[in-house]
Length: 283
Image 1 (cartoon, rainbow, N blue to C red):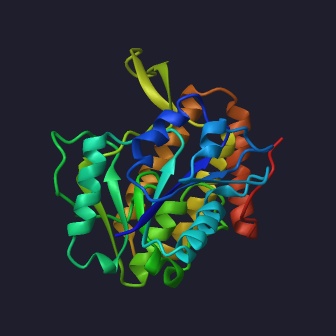
Image 2 (image 1 turned 90 degrees about the vertical axis):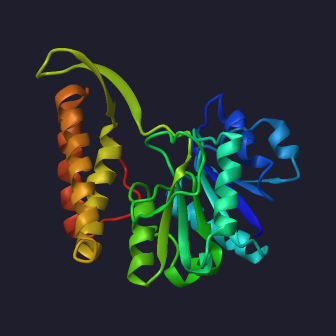
Image 3 (image 1 turned 180 degrees about the vertical axis):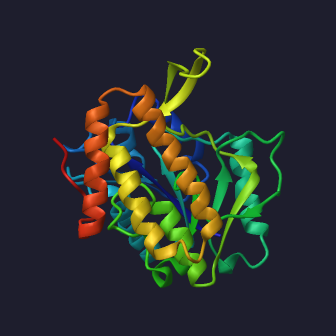
């Protein structure tokens, strides 16, 4: 099994070289696809590494477009699978080795469009445990490049947010599996956590808060995906709806710029209804 990896970047932090080091030696090639505007200045040692290809043109083309760009390159270079990573995600060596072994030993893996890892809770130890899932996240997923063209790639109309779920839903509609290894853990930040005082108990708690522009894409893209896929995947959309409304509620209750958030949500509803997808500008 020959596989490459891609990491999508947007002005990555100081921890970035350390994060990619956790999986670089386990891949045949790493593509760094940069969405920074202007292009980010990567350390020279990354440019000099023969296993690394940096793709940067100073334009934020979104997650889906960059993934499609790299998938085409990797497929043309005869790679079978592509590991997709976020800039702030990493693997423990033991976890990644178990992940690769699980995929190699998975029966009928040729019919699996995407494998994913566990990002919510740490298993007691790496294992072969798995479950079917249509809610895999981009980071830590392994994409079957033999099936990606047939599925149609990632939906670039989404730009960011929901890109991973859309791919899983489309794969499911075409009869392909998407599988999460619950015994393999990915180190991943699920949004920026903030300490706030609960309105109910007045006790301090940690909540994930998102900027208004992110909530815009989450809300707009959820409506778009719901229209296309909810009838086929009602249970998954019930979970997505609950999660989305909880994120919106947290920001309206505890986040700054509440009026900006409301305007972003209203714009999201309007743009979806008028078919204004892709990248949008915010002032």
